Length: 202
Image (tube, helix red, strand yellow):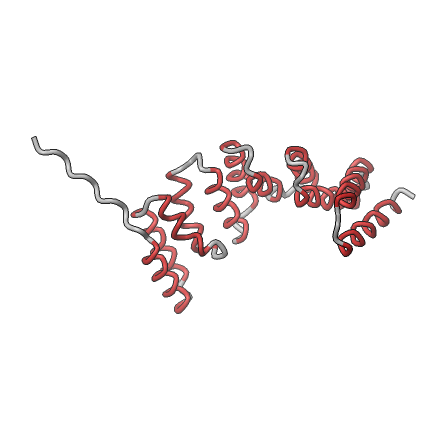
């Protein structure tokens, strides 16, 4: 009995991807690019797509069709979901789809900070967004970016709703950032922000 033929390995999509993007840059035809990339993604292995697309992380029109295929093929790949969610966010796809994808990434890998950041960023309600940034800052206490976002959102909440709890949270978070700051310009900015916030309670 003859053995089944061994499937040919997936080709490296890098060269074809370069050709597609060069044509897109000449013509500006997004529709053709998306059709070409979707077809390329179907013929290529997820890992090969990741490698080939790495140089185009700043082009969401390239990342989205490729990473939709990657995420579909690897539903537990948290980082792939983060890359796709970020591309969606940059193109204004909408907070709901970004939040859902980021939540899936968090579930797949709770240590992925990018997933947590996008999950918080995508929440449209200010109070809920502040709560999400608090959850991120609590899980990753050394994450200054998350704490700065928490302080900014808590400040907005205190302003918009005259919320004393949010004001207290904003002050405490900015004080923590100030204590860790080493850059003079940053320290001056934080001190000015704290002076303004403390005046709300005067």
